Length: 248
Image (cartoon, rainbow, N blue to C red):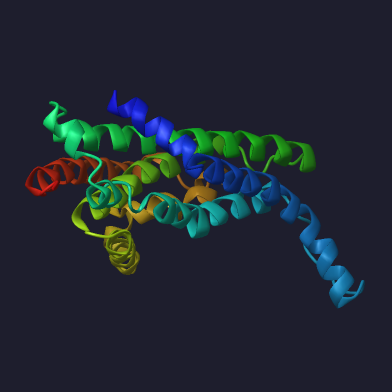
């Protein structure tokens, strides 16, 4: 029942609509930008400038760059207050006093977030794939599905970070600060080459290499395992935090 309430609230507040439009724009713009950028540069720099012919790799590179550099942070902004907002507005009081377990609140919210992530990313992926195939007939991107799998796993982890931050923080901005801090730590850890294959951030950094066949997906299995393990820990920790929160 609470899961249905979450879906309805996400729809009524138009957060899912905003997210869907943003990712749709990513899907449409990525292949188009790869196709038109050389022509635009020639117009601005002169026809004598020699530029490499755009390929399908350029389209997918733009796609993953858009999601990893903008998409996930838009998600953090839209859903950074998913729990803290409920506590501030005291909307959970009646539900919990009527018997709703607090763990059900966290699980329902996470599943709702995860469902939205899978829908918008999968939709954007297939649209990008279709337009990339239309614009570029080369065979330089032989593993599109394998390249997208790490992104999906990273999203599951990132949503758990957002959920934990929102449960821990009293206000939306505190949850956002926590999410930014976690990402900063992971990017700093990326400087350690020994930890590369175990760092969840690698799941949004090596997609193009996997796409081209220059890196095997199995190399990122450790990072995927770490990401899923941390996801479980963060969800359990969110439940523990909410159990200690005063609802009134």
